[in-house]
Length: 287
Length: 336
Image 1 (cartoon, chains in turn green, purple):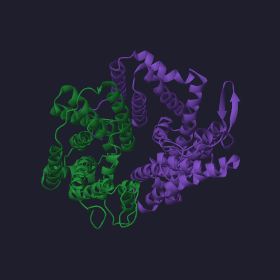
Image 2 (image 1 turned 180 degrees about the vertical axis):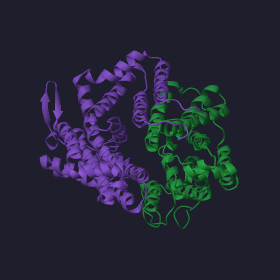
Image 3 (image 1 turned 60 degrees about the vertical axis):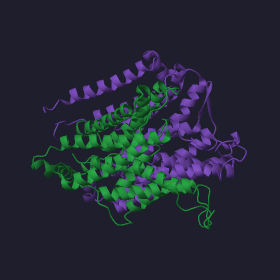
Image 4 (image 1 turned 90 degrees about the horizontal axis):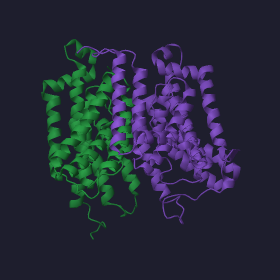
């Protein structure tokens, strides 16, 4: 025991921090692809939940963690494509469609888990560092795509003004399909990491992390590096909450609920424009 | 790609939904017809089951109005769940302190005030700062979960209980009802009915209701016609929160009698679906809230057939999507 009662930083803090940052970062980058193409996406949570459930189920029954992960990613992509079809072809309000997908994922995963996941079958997951690398690659790749690649710039153009993009010969609906597939893959990876970390699937396993990722996306102003910084900050709160559980900081006993609420509180303050304005893609929600 | 006609499109969507439900029903191993019958009719099996259905019906109607109110102004109040929780918690604490019929009244009013207070940041941010209400209300929901779970596991917890709950109100401290045959219809339910009807009247027959609809339909036209769009937006979200909080307080003093972890089984989120399924007319909230109550009650009963309760949520989510597609699906060129 040192002067501060507990050591300020230790290895478990670092691993927890990286873990939560990777979970949030993957999902937030997924959300970025969707929202920068103009599709509002509150369905990150649902895509993560679905992937977590399917990864656990297929990994366990097939005995192959790779097949499990691929199945999880495919399931999340299917939900992404559903969101694309509902908003682009059926003209559903993006919020209604996202809400429907979240509800569907909640009901379907409860159904799948209770019907098909057998407790006696051992779960099969890929080692966690794989996901850390995925998160780093995803960050580098999205920076590269949005800053250096023609496809990324086209996507940004659509998100800012779909009509102008159309006059230059870009088909917004097609580009958005790819954007939603990317969102599905990234949210799928995030969900798979959640279930790998917890060691098995349970109802509502993602516990609102998709919404924290959404908050990080907004706080980071829809830009890859800023979003990653926001995710690191939010993850630090969550890791700190585990680290400092029950131990007073400078004489104050802060409840776990405070640490858990902090990311949401900060996002509210940022939304109120009290931390400088972030600019949303101008074409968000437009056809 | 050649655009499909809207009806073909809707047909494809409907077919997909039906296939998903059928796959779920068949893979569950139970008899699909039996599962569907149980889902829809379990509420009428016994007086207890019907009473439980009514216990859901009441908040679905009130929260349905809360969501509908904001939706008419073009706003998505996703925060109904958090406002309902905060209202329920405050209502319980106030009713426990005051007691008697005064406690019932003050509890419901306290719920209303706290619900409005919980919507206030979202209303202000949306109307005067330009931040989207969906994001702010999601954030406020998460804070409400954390805060209510924290308080009910500590400061307001019944020390004699083995799990996070407040003390329970005695029957004399709760809202009674009218006996109808084998069941008791709580006054709260009658109030909720009246409330939906009154809301429908308000929306159609008053200037304020008309202004609300104009702001929702076309804010630019509204402001040219002299409507203070910001004030209307602010008031709509605040009213929505007040109604949701009132629903929480009422649920505490009429049905639950206590606040505990799991006080809401997702009423606020379901209410979004209730309002969407209601269509354009507020009176539609009554049948759509009843359908929600039936399916949620039935979801508990299908477990005796070894079918997970998630089947009800799954069916409801598909219904909401399908119904919205029918309402939105007027135009349809593939490439806009």
